[in-house]
Length: 287
Length: 284
Image (cartoon, rainbow over the protein chains, first blue to last red):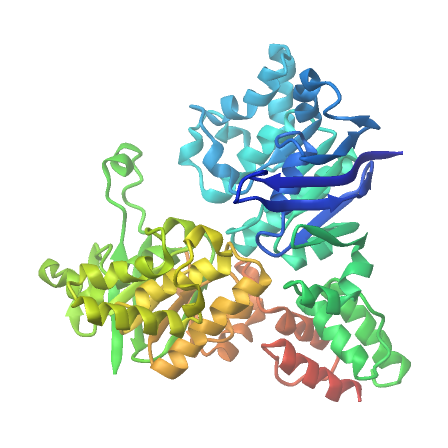
Protein backbone atom coordinates (compact mmCIF):
# COMPACT_ATOMS: atom_id res chain seq x y z
CA UNK A 1 0.00 0.00 0.00
CA UNK A 2 1.21 3.49 -0.73
CA UNK A 3 2.38 5.50 2.26
CA UNK A 4 1.42 8.83 0.73
CA UNK A 5 -1.23 9.52 -1.85
CA UNK A 6 -2.58 12.78 -3.19
CA UNK A 7 -5.93 13.03 -4.90
CA UNK A 8 -6.61 16.03 -7.17
CA UNK A 9 -4.59 18.13 -4.76
CA UNK A 10 -5.26 21.78 -5.58
CA UNK A 11 -4.19 25.04 -4.02
CA UNK A 12 -5.50 28.48 -4.90
CA UNK A 13 -3.63 31.51 -3.64
CA UNK A 14 -5.68 34.58 -2.66
CA UNK A 15 -8.85 32.68 -3.54
CA UNK A 16 -11.92 34.79 -4.27
CA UNK A 17 -9.91 37.99 -4.69
CA UNK A 18 -8.76 39.69 -7.89
CA UNK A 19 -5.29 38.26 -7.15
CA UNK A 20 -6.47 34.66 -7.28
CA UNK A 21 -4.00 32.38 -8.96
CA UNK A 22 -3.38 28.70 -8.91
CA UNK A 23 -0.39 27.31 -7.01
CA UNK A 24 -0.98 23.60 -7.40
CA UNK A 25 -3.39 22.23 -9.96
CA UNK A 26 -5.02 18.87 -9.36
CA UNK A 27 -2.04 16.65 -8.67
CA UNK A 28 -2.69 12.95 -8.03
CA UNK A 29 0.32 10.80 -7.27
CA UNK A 30 1.15 7.79 -5.14
CA UNK A 31 4.37 7.30 -3.23
CA UNK A 32 5.32 3.86 -1.92
CA UNK A 33 7.05 3.24 1.37
CA UNK A 34 10.81 3.38 0.92
CA UNK A 35 10.70 5.37 -2.33
CA UNK A 36 13.25 8.09 -2.97
CA UNK A 37 11.26 10.58 -5.02
CA UNK A 38 12.62 13.65 -6.78
CA UNK A 39 10.52 16.70 -7.58
CA UNK A 40 11.78 18.97 -10.35
CA UNK A 41 10.24 21.96 -12.09
CA UNK A 42 11.00 25.57 -13.01
CA UNK A 43 10.91 28.25 -10.29
CA UNK A 44 7.32 29.02 -9.46
CA UNK A 45 6.05 25.68 -10.77
CA UNK A 46 4.47 24.86 -7.41
CA UNK A 47 7.05 22.43 -6.01
CA UNK A 48 7.32 24.09 -2.62
CA UNK A 49 3.56 24.68 -2.30
CA UNK A 50 2.98 21.05 -3.14
CA UNK A 51 5.45 19.73 -0.57
CA UNK A 52 4.07 22.03 2.12
CA UNK A 53 0.65 20.50 1.63
CA UNK A 54 2.08 17.02 2.14
CA UNK A 55 2.69 17.65 5.83
CA UNK A 56 -0.32 19.85 6.42
CA UNK A 57 1.54 23.16 6.64
CA UNK A 58 -0.78 24.52 3.97
CA UNK A 59 -4.36 23.35 3.76
CA UNK A 60 -5.35 22.45 0.21
CA UNK A 61 -8.19 24.38 -1.43
CA UNK A 62 -9.53 21.09 -2.69
CA UNK A 63 -8.35 17.51 -3.02
CA UNK A 64 -6.92 15.20 -0.41
CA UNK A 65 -3.64 14.00 1.04
CA UNK A 66 -3.71 10.45 2.39
CA UNK A 67 -0.98 9.42 4.80
CA UNK A 68 -1.01 5.68 5.52
CA UNK A 69 -4.44 5.60 3.92
CA UNK A 70 -5.90 8.31 6.17
CA UNK A 71 -6.98 11.77 5.07
CA UNK A 72 -4.65 14.11 7.00
CA UNK A 73 -7.30 16.81 7.38
CA UNK A 74 -10.03 14.46 8.57
CA UNK A 75 -9.41 15.43 12.15
CA UNK A 76 -7.91 18.92 12.47
CA UNK A 77 -6.60 18.13 15.95
CA UNK A 78 -4.36 15.38 14.65
CA UNK A 79 -2.50 17.56 12.18
CA UNK A 80 0.36 17.92 14.68
CA UNK A 81 1.01 14.19 14.47
CA UNK A 82 1.11 14.43 10.70
CA UNK A 83 3.90 16.98 10.96
CA UNK A 84 5.90 14.61 13.15
CA UNK A 85 5.41 11.83 10.64
CA UNK A 86 6.23 13.95 7.62
CA UNK A 87 9.38 15.96 8.33
CA UNK A 88 9.99 18.97 6.11
CA UNK A 89 13.36 20.68 5.65
CA UNK A 90 12.79 24.06 4.05
CA UNK A 91 14.88 25.91 1.50
CA UNK A 92 17.90 27.54 3.12
CA UNK A 93 17.17 25.88 6.46
CA UNK A 94 20.31 27.38 8.00
CA UNK A 95 18.33 30.59 8.52
CA UNK A 96 15.95 28.75 10.82
CA UNK A 97 18.51 27.82 13.44
CA UNK A 98 17.80 29.76 16.59
CA UNK A 99 19.00 27.95 19.70
CA UNK A 100 22.08 28.69 21.79
CA UNK A 101 23.77 25.42 20.99
CA UNK A 102 23.66 22.91 18.19
CA UNK A 103 22.47 20.29 20.67
CA UNK A 104 19.48 22.34 21.76
CA UNK A 105 18.59 23.15 18.17
CA UNK A 106 18.52 19.52 17.10
CA UNK A 107 16.67 18.58 20.31
CA UNK A 108 13.90 21.11 19.66
CA UNK A 109 11.75 18.77 17.56
CA UNK A 110 12.01 15.68 19.77
CA UNK A 111 11.40 17.85 22.86
CA UNK A 112 8.18 19.09 21.35
CA UNK A 113 7.17 15.52 20.67
CA UNK A 114 7.27 15.03 24.44
CA UNK A 115 10.05 12.44 24.49
CA UNK A 116 12.07 11.66 27.61
CA UNK A 117 15.45 13.24 28.25
CA UNK A 118 17.27 10.01 27.41
CA UNK A 119 15.39 9.42 24.21
CA UNK A 120 16.06 12.97 23.11
CA UNK A 121 19.76 12.55 23.76
CA UNK A 122 19.86 9.35 21.80
CA UNK A 123 18.04 10.92 18.88
CA UNK A 124 20.29 13.97 18.80
CA UNK A 125 23.39 11.78 18.69
CA UNK A 126 22.06 9.38 16.10
CA UNK A 127 20.78 12.11 13.79
CA UNK A 128 24.15 13.88 14.09
CA UNK A 129 25.76 10.69 12.93
CA UNK A 130 23.38 10.42 9.99
CA UNK A 131 24.26 13.85 8.66
CA UNK A 132 27.96 13.43 9.41
CA UNK A 133 28.27 16.10 12.10
CA UNK A 134 31.03 15.71 14.62
CA UNK A 135 29.83 15.48 18.23
CA UNK A 136 32.36 18.14 19.21
CA UNK A 137 30.13 20.67 17.44
CA UNK A 138 27.16 19.96 19.70
CA UNK A 139 28.06 22.50 22.35
CA UNK A 140 28.94 25.21 19.85
CA UNK A 141 26.60 27.97 18.82
CA UNK A 142 24.98 27.09 15.49
CA UNK A 143 25.92 30.56 14.26
CA UNK A 144 29.63 29.72 14.51
CA UNK A 145 29.40 26.97 11.92
CA UNK A 146 30.05 27.08 8.20
CA UNK A 147 27.14 27.21 5.77
CA UNK A 148 27.31 23.51 4.96
CA UNK A 149 27.50 22.56 8.65
CA UNK A 150 24.55 24.77 9.54
CA UNK A 151 22.52 23.14 6.86
CA UNK A 152 23.37 19.70 8.18
CA UNK A 153 22.33 20.79 11.68
CA UNK A 154 18.96 21.87 10.31
CA UNK A 155 18.53 18.55 8.51
CA UNK A 156 19.55 16.68 11.68
CA UNK A 157 16.86 18.59 13.57
CA UNK A 158 14.21 17.12 11.31
CA UNK A 159 15.72 13.64 11.18
CA UNK A 160 15.76 13.63 15.00
CA UNK A 161 11.97 13.49 14.92
CA UNK A 162 12.38 10.20 13.04
CA UNK A 163 9.77 11.03 10.41
CA UNK A 164 8.33 8.29 8.23
CA UNK A 165 8.67 10.61 5.30
CA UNK A 166 11.49 13.11 4.98
CA UNK A 167 10.98 15.99 2.57
CA UNK A 168 13.89 18.25 1.63
CA UNK A 169 13.37 21.42 -0.38
CA UNK A 170 16.58 22.12 -2.30
CA UNK A 171 18.98 20.91 0.38
CA UNK A 172 22.09 21.56 -1.73
CA UNK A 173 21.30 24.98 -3.26
CA UNK A 174 24.26 27.33 -2.86
CA UNK A 175 26.65 24.69 -1.55
CA UNK A 176 29.98 23.96 -3.19
CA UNK A 177 30.52 20.61 -4.94
CA UNK A 178 32.09 19.09 -1.82
CA UNK A 179 29.26 20.19 0.49
CA UNK A 180 26.73 19.02 -2.04
CA UNK A 181 28.28 15.57 -2.43
CA UNK A 182 28.52 15.20 1.34
CA UNK A 183 24.85 15.99 1.96
CA UNK A 184 23.67 13.84 -0.93
CA UNK A 185 25.76 10.84 0.13
CA UNK A 186 24.60 11.16 3.77
CA UNK A 187 21.02 11.34 2.57
CA UNK A 188 21.26 8.28 0.40
CA UNK A 189 22.93 6.40 3.28
CA UNK A 190 20.13 7.54 5.59
CA UNK A 191 17.58 6.33 3.08
CA UNK A 192 19.28 2.95 2.69
CA UNK A 193 19.68 2.35 6.42
CA UNK A 194 16.28 3.40 7.66
CA UNK A 195 14.41 2.56 4.50
CA UNK A 196 12.34 5.69 5.07
CA UNK A 197 10.59 7.51 2.31
CA UNK A 198 12.54 10.54 1.09
CA UNK A 199 11.23 13.32 -1.15
CA UNK A 200 13.84 15.61 -2.67
CA UNK A 201 12.98 18.92 -4.35
CA UNK A 202 15.91 20.04 -6.47
CA UNK A 203 17.10 22.18 -9.35
CA UNK A 204 20.06 19.90 -9.81
CA UNK A 205 19.19 17.29 -12.43
CA UNK A 206 22.46 15.54 -11.51
CA UNK A 207 21.43 15.08 -7.86
CA UNK A 208 18.00 13.79 -8.79
CA UNK A 209 19.33 11.46 -11.48
CA UNK A 210 21.87 9.93 -9.15
CA UNK A 211 19.70 9.40 -6.09
CA UNK A 212 16.01 9.12 -6.87
CA UNK A 213 13.98 6.09 -7.97
CA UNK A 214 11.06 8.15 -9.19
CA UNK A 215 10.65 11.72 -10.37
CA UNK A 216 7.70 14.10 -10.38
CA UNK A 217 8.05 16.79 -13.05
CA UNK A 218 5.98 19.89 -12.33
CA UNK A 219 5.12 22.55 -14.85
CA UNK A 220 2.89 25.58 -14.30
CA UNK A 221 1.33 24.07 -11.15
CA UNK A 222 0.52 20.79 -12.88
CA UNK A 223 2.09 17.36 -12.87
CA UNK A 224 3.80 17.06 -16.26
CA UNK A 225 5.14 13.57 -15.63
CA UNK A 226 5.52 11.10 -12.77
CA UNK A 227 7.61 8.06 -13.57
CA UNK A 228 10.85 6.24 -12.87
CA UNK A 229 14.01 8.35 -13.04
CA UNK A 230 15.17 6.53 -16.14
CA UNK A 231 11.91 7.14 -18.02
CA UNK A 232 11.78 10.80 -17.02
CA UNK A 233 15.33 11.60 -18.09
CA UNK A 234 14.92 9.66 -21.33
CA UNK A 235 12.22 12.14 -22.23
CA UNK A 236 14.46 15.11 -22.93
CA UNK A 237 11.90 16.75 -25.20
CA UNK A 238 9.38 17.09 -22.41
CA UNK A 239 12.03 18.30 -19.96
CA UNK A 240 13.27 21.01 -22.31
CA UNK A 241 9.72 22.10 -23.07
CA UNK A 242 9.12 22.78 -19.38
CA UNK A 243 12.37 24.73 -18.93
CA UNK A 244 14.39 21.88 -17.43
CA UNK A 245 17.19 19.80 -18.83
CA UNK A 246 18.64 16.34 -18.63
CA UNK A 247 21.89 15.74 -16.72
CA UNK A 248 24.92 16.61 -18.89
CA UNK A 249 25.99 12.99 -19.20
CA UNK A 250 22.49 11.96 -20.31
CA UNK A 251 22.51 14.77 -22.87
CA UNK A 252 25.85 13.63 -24.27
CA UNK A 253 24.93 9.94 -24.52
CA UNK A 254 21.49 10.77 -25.92
CA UNK A 255 23.01 12.88 -28.70
CA UNK A 256 25.43 10.07 -29.53
CA UNK A 257 22.52 7.64 -29.64
CA UNK A 258 20.64 9.96 -32.00
CA UNK A 259 23.70 10.01 -34.25
CA UNK A 260 23.25 6.29 -34.67
CA UNK A 261 25.61 4.80 -32.09
CA UNK A 262 24.01 1.91 -30.25
CA UNK A 263 23.93 3.21 -26.69
CA UNK A 264 20.98 2.66 -24.31
CA UNK A 265 18.79 5.64 -23.45
CA UNK A 266 18.54 7.14 -20.00
CA UNK A 267 22.18 6.85 -18.88
CA UNK A 268 22.20 8.79 -15.62
CA UNK A 269 25.77 8.90 -14.38
CA UNK A 270 29.31 9.16 -15.66
CA UNK A 271 30.27 5.67 -14.43
CA UNK A 272 27.50 4.02 -16.46
CA UNK A 273 28.37 6.11 -19.50
CA UNK A 274 32.01 5.00 -19.28
CA UNK A 275 30.96 1.35 -19.07
CA UNK A 276 28.50 1.61 -21.98
CA UNK A 277 30.91 3.44 -24.25
CA UNK A 278 33.85 1.12 -23.57
CA UNK A 279 31.58 -1.92 -24.07
CA UNK A 280 30.45 -0.50 -27.37
CA UNK A 281 34.05 0.06 -28.47
CA UNK A 282 34.97 -3.47 -27.41
CA UNK A 283 32.03 -4.96 -29.30
CA UNK A 284 33.24 -3.21 -32.40
CA UNK A 285 36.80 -4.31 -31.80
CA UNK A 286 38.14 -0.78 -31.37
CA UNK A 287 39.38 -1.23 -27.84
CA UNK B 1 45.60 47.01 -20.24
CA UNK B 2 45.02 45.62 -16.78
CA UNK B 3 41.79 46.73 -15.21
CA UNK B 4 42.21 45.00 -11.87
CA UNK B 5 45.61 44.25 -10.38
CA UNK B 6 46.14 42.51 -7.05
CA UNK B 7 49.65 42.59 -5.63
CA UNK B 8 50.37 40.17 -2.78
CA UNK B 9 46.93 40.87 -1.42
CA UNK B 10 46.19 39.41 2.01
CA UNK B 11 43.09 39.90 4.05
CA UNK B 12 41.64 38.82 7.38
CA UNK B 13 38.39 39.75 9.02
CA UNK B 14 39.60 41.68 12.02
CA UNK B 15 36.61 41.92 14.26
CA UNK B 16 36.09 41.98 17.99
CA UNK B 17 34.57 38.57 17.49
CA UNK B 18 37.58 37.00 15.82
CA UNK B 19 39.85 38.37 18.55
CA UNK B 20 37.54 36.86 21.11
CA UNK B 21 37.79 33.51 19.38
CA UNK B 22 41.55 33.87 19.00
CA UNK B 23 41.42 33.06 15.34
CA UNK B 24 42.07 36.60 14.21
CA UNK B 25 45.27 35.39 12.64
CA UNK B 26 43.59 33.32 9.95
CA UNK B 27 44.08 34.91 6.57
CA UNK B 28 41.00 34.64 4.40
CA UNK B 29 43.04 35.80 1.43
CA UNK B 30 46.68 34.82 1.53
CA UNK B 31 49.16 36.55 -0.74
CA UNK B 32 46.95 36.70 -3.84
CA UNK B 33 48.36 38.28 -6.98
CA UNK B 34 46.36 38.48 -10.16
CA UNK B 35 45.62 40.62 -13.20
CA UNK B 36 42.33 41.06 -14.97
CA UNK B 37 42.44 42.80 -18.32
CA UNK B 38 39.89 45.29 -19.57
CA UNK B 39 37.09 43.50 -21.41
CA UNK B 40 38.08 40.09 -20.11
CA UNK B 41 35.61 37.47 -18.86
CA UNK B 42 37.06 35.87 -15.76
CA UNK B 43 35.62 33.04 -13.69
CA UNK B 44 36.60 32.32 -10.09
CA UNK B 45 35.85 28.86 -8.71
CA UNK B 46 36.61 27.16 -5.40
CA UNK B 47 35.06 25.75 -2.23
CA UNK B 48 32.85 27.58 0.20
CA UNK B 49 35.23 29.44 2.46
CA UNK B 50 38.06 29.48 -0.09
CA UNK B 51 37.94 33.28 -0.20
CA UNK B 52 36.10 33.81 -3.50
CA UNK B 53 33.46 36.20 -2.17
CA UNK B 54 35.97 38.02 0.00
CA UNK B 55 38.08 38.56 -3.09
CA UNK B 56 35.04 39.81 -5.02
CA UNK B 57 34.31 42.35 -2.30
CA UNK B 58 37.85 43.67 -2.63
CA UNK B 59 37.16 44.47 -6.28
CA UNK B 60 34.70 47.25 -5.48
CA UNK B 61 36.30 48.41 -2.23
CA UNK B 62 33.67 46.92 0.04
CA UNK B 63 36.66 45.40 1.79
CA UNK B 64 40.22 46.70 1.62
CA UNK B 65 43.38 44.60 1.84
CA UNK B 66 44.96 43.97 5.25
CA UNK B 67 48.29 43.93 3.45
CA UNK B 68 49.30 44.15 -0.17
CA UNK B 69 47.57 46.30 -2.77
CA UNK B 70 44.63 46.18 -5.08
CA UNK B 71 44.32 48.57 -8.00
CA UNK B 72 41.11 49.09 -9.93
CA UNK B 73 41.69 50.96 -13.16
CA UNK B 74 44.85 52.33 -11.57
CA UNK B 75 43.14 53.49 -8.37
CA UNK B 76 44.40 52.10 -5.07
CA UNK B 77 41.33 50.75 -3.22
CA UNK B 78 42.81 51.66 0.16
CA UNK B 79 42.47 55.34 -0.79
CA UNK B 80 39.18 56.06 0.96
CA UNK B 81 38.58 59.30 -0.92
CA UNK B 82 38.32 57.36 -4.21
CA UNK B 83 35.94 54.73 -2.86
CA UNK B 84 32.90 56.02 -4.77
CA UNK B 85 34.88 56.29 -8.00
CA UNK B 86 35.73 52.62 -7.66
CA UNK B 87 32.15 51.60 -6.94
CA UNK B 88 31.03 53.51 -10.00
CA UNK B 89 33.44 51.47 -12.08
CA UNK B 90 32.75 48.09 -10.54
CA UNK B 91 29.20 46.84 -9.96
CA UNK B 92 28.40 43.86 -7.76
CA UNK B 93 25.56 41.33 -8.25
CA UNK B 94 24.87 38.92 -5.41
CA UNK B 95 23.54 35.40 -5.05
CA UNK B 96 20.00 35.96 -3.87
CA UNK B 97 17.89 38.10 -6.21
CA UNK B 98 15.41 38.84 -3.44
CA UNK B 99 18.05 40.52 -1.31
CA UNK B 100 19.06 43.12 -3.85
CA UNK B 101 15.88 44.47 -5.39
CA UNK B 102 14.72 47.52 -3.44
CA UNK B 103 11.82 49.13 -5.32
CA UNK B 104 8.30 47.88 -5.95
CA UNK B 105 8.46 48.39 -9.72
CA UNK B 106 11.16 46.98 -11.99
CA UNK B 107 12.12 50.26 -13.71
CA UNK B 108 12.29 52.13 -10.41
CA UNK B 109 14.60 49.49 -9.09
CA UNK B 110 16.92 49.85 -12.06
CA UNK B 111 16.81 53.65 -11.63
CA UNK B 112 17.96 53.45 -8.02
CA UNK B 113 21.67 53.35 -8.86
CA UNK B 114 21.74 56.21 -11.40
CA UNK B 115 19.54 58.33 -9.09
CA UNK B 116 22.13 57.97 -6.38
CA UNK B 117 24.81 59.04 -8.81
CA UNK B 118 22.88 62.31 -9.18
CA UNK B 119 22.19 61.95 -12.87
CA UNK B 120 19.73 64.13 -14.80
CA UNK B 121 16.19 62.57 -14.73
CA UNK B 122 15.83 62.46 -18.52
CA UNK B 123 19.18 60.75 -18.75
CA UNK B 124 18.13 58.26 -16.07
CA UNK B 125 15.11 57.31 -18.19
CA UNK B 126 17.42 56.63 -21.12
CA UNK B 127 19.85 54.59 -19.08
CA UNK B 128 17.09 52.53 -17.45
CA UNK B 129 15.54 51.69 -20.81
CA UNK B 130 18.92 50.78 -22.25
CA UNK B 131 19.84 48.61 -19.30
CA UNK B 132 16.52 46.77 -19.34
CA UNK B 133 16.86 46.14 -23.05
CA UNK B 134 20.40 44.86 -22.54
CA UNK B 135 19.14 42.12 -20.22
CA UNK B 136 16.01 41.54 -22.28
CA UNK B 137 13.63 42.68 -19.53
CA UNK B 138 12.25 45.84 -21.16
CA UNK B 139 8.79 44.34 -21.57
CA UNK B 140 8.63 43.79 -17.84
CA UNK B 141 9.56 47.35 -16.85
CA UNK B 142 6.27 48.10 -15.10
CA UNK B 143 6.03 44.76 -13.30
CA UNK B 144 6.44 44.30 -9.57
CA UNK B 145 9.70 42.40 -8.92
CA UNK B 146 7.98 39.75 -6.81
CA UNK B 147 5.89 38.74 -9.83
CA UNK B 148 9.01 37.71 -11.72
CA UNK B 149 10.79 34.38 -11.82
CA UNK B 150 14.20 33.98 -10.17
CA UNK B 151 16.07 34.28 -13.46
CA UNK B 152 14.12 37.41 -14.38
CA UNK B 153 14.78 39.00 -10.99
CA UNK B 154 18.45 38.29 -11.30
CA UNK B 155 18.46 39.93 -14.75
CA UNK B 156 16.77 42.99 -13.26
CA UNK B 157 19.51 43.09 -10.60
CA UNK B 158 22.09 42.99 -13.41
CA UNK B 159 20.23 45.79 -15.22
CA UNK B 160 20.41 47.85 -12.03
CA UNK B 161 24.17 47.53 -12.13
CA UNK B 162 24.43 48.19 -15.89
CA UNK B 163 22.39 51.40 -15.54
CA UNK B 164 25.29 52.80 -13.54
CA UNK B 165 27.44 52.13 -16.61
CA UNK B 166 30.26 50.37 -14.82
CA UNK B 167 33.38 49.17 -16.60
CA UNK B 168 33.23 45.90 -14.75
CA UNK B 169 30.56 43.66 -13.24
CA UNK B 170 31.38 41.23 -10.45
CA UNK B 171 28.78 38.49 -10.03
CA UNK B 172 28.90 36.41 -6.86
CA UNK B 173 27.17 33.10 -7.65
CA UNK B 174 24.35 34.78 -9.55
CA UNK B 175 22.78 31.48 -10.58
CA UNK B 176 22.99 29.50 -7.34
CA UNK B 177 19.27 29.84 -6.64
CA UNK B 178 17.95 29.51 -10.17
CA UNK B 179 16.41 26.67 -12.14
CA UNK B 180 18.17 25.41 -15.30
CA UNK B 181 16.42 27.81 -17.69
CA UNK B 182 16.94 30.78 -15.35
CA UNK B 183 20.59 29.87 -15.11
CA UNK B 184 20.84 29.76 -18.86
CA UNK B 185 19.16 33.20 -19.23
CA UNK B 186 21.58 34.82 -16.82
CA UNK B 187 24.71 33.26 -18.32
CA UNK B 188 23.61 34.23 -21.84
CA UNK B 189 23.04 37.80 -20.66
CA UNK B 190 26.45 37.98 -19.01
CA UNK B 191 28.17 36.63 -22.11
CA UNK B 192 26.38 39.11 -24.33
CA UNK B 193 27.28 42.09 -22.14
CA UNK B 194 30.88 41.01 -22.22
CA UNK B 195 31.04 40.43 -25.98
CA UNK B 196 28.86 43.30 -27.21
CA UNK B 197 29.44 46.05 -24.65
CA UNK B 198 32.97 45.07 -23.72
CA UNK B 199 32.18 45.05 -20.01
CA UNK B 200 34.78 43.27 -17.90
CA UNK B 201 33.08 40.36 -16.15
CA UNK B 202 34.16 38.53 -13.01
CA UNK B 203 31.93 35.53 -12.42
CA UNK B 204 32.14 33.58 -9.18
CA UNK B 205 30.48 30.21 -9.51
CA UNK B 206 30.22 26.64 -8.26
CA UNK B 207 29.10 25.43 -11.67
CA UNK B 208 32.09 24.39 -13.73
CA UNK B 209 29.87 24.32 -16.83
CA UNK B 210 29.54 28.11 -16.41
CA UNK B 211 33.23 28.71 -15.81
CA UNK B 212 33.94 27.11 -19.17
CA UNK B 213 32.53 30.24 -20.87
CA UNK B 214 35.24 32.47 -19.44
CA UNK B 215 38.47 33.65 -21.07
CA UNK B 216 40.35 32.88 -17.90
CA UNK B 217 39.64 30.77 -14.80
CA UNK B 218 41.12 31.24 -11.32
CA UNK B 219 40.79 28.34 -8.89
CA UNK B 220 40.85 29.46 -5.24
CA UNK B 221 41.75 27.11 -2.41
CA UNK B 222 42.33 28.09 1.21
CA UNK B 223 42.69 31.79 0.40
CA UNK B 224 45.29 31.21 -2.29
CA UNK B 225 45.13 30.85 -6.03
CA UNK B 226 45.62 27.14 -6.69
CA UNK B 227 45.88 27.48 -10.44
CA UNK B 228 44.78 29.74 -13.25
CA UNK B 229 44.67 29.86 -17.01
CA UNK B 230 42.27 29.34 -19.87
CA UNK B 231 39.38 26.97 -19.05
CA UNK B 232 41.15 24.38 -21.14
CA UNK B 233 44.42 24.69 -19.22
CA UNK B 234 42.68 24.62 -15.84
CA UNK B 235 40.19 21.83 -16.36
CA UNK B 236 42.66 19.51 -18.07
CA UNK B 237 44.35 19.22 -14.65
CA UNK B 238 41.69 16.76 -13.56
CA UNK B 239 43.91 15.08 -10.96
CA UNK B 240 44.89 18.27 -9.18
CA UNK B 241 41.27 19.45 -9.00
CA UNK B 242 39.99 16.04 -7.89
CA UNK B 243 42.59 15.93 -5.14
CA UNK B 244 41.22 19.20 -3.80
CA UNK B 245 37.72 17.81 -4.23
CA UNK B 246 36.78 20.31 -6.86
CA UNK B 247 34.64 19.46 -9.86
CA UNK B 248 35.47 19.50 -13.52
CA UNK B 249 32.77 19.78 -16.20
CA UNK B 250 30.92 16.50 -16.79
CA UNK B 251 32.11 16.36 -20.41
CA UNK B 252 35.74 16.60 -19.25
CA UNK B 253 35.23 14.04 -16.52
CA UNK B 254 33.60 11.55 -18.87
CA UNK B 255 36.42 11.75 -21.41
CA UNK B 256 39.07 11.69 -18.68
CA UNK B 257 37.64 8.41 -17.37
CA UNK B 258 37.31 6.98 -20.86
CA UNK B 259 40.95 7.81 -21.49
CA UNK B 260 41.86 6.02 -18.26
CA UNK B 261 40.07 2.94 -19.68
CA UNK B 262 42.35 3.06 -22.69
CA UNK B 263 40.12 4.95 -25.12
CA UNK B 264 42.19 7.06 -27.49
CA UNK B 265 41.32 10.65 -26.48
CA UNK B 266 43.95 13.24 -27.19
CA UNK B 267 42.55 16.46 -25.79
CA UNK B 268 39.86 16.69 -23.12
CA UNK B 269 36.68 18.55 -24.15
CA UNK B 270 35.06 21.27 -22.01
CA UNK B 271 31.52 21.51 -23.30
CA UNK B 272 28.89 18.92 -24.12
CA UNK B 273 29.06 19.87 -27.82
CA UNK B 274 32.82 19.32 -27.95
CA UNK B 275 32.41 16.04 -26.13
CA UNK B 276 29.71 14.79 -28.51
CA UNK B 277 31.82 15.72 -31.54
CA UNK B 278 34.88 14.06 -30.06
CA UNK B 279 33.12 10.85 -29.06
CA UNK B 280 31.41 10.63 -32.45
CA UNK B 281 34.88 10.58 -33.99
CA UNK B 282 36.10 7.94 -31.56
CA UNK B 283 33.09 5.71 -32.06
CA UNK B 284 32.92 6.05 -35.82
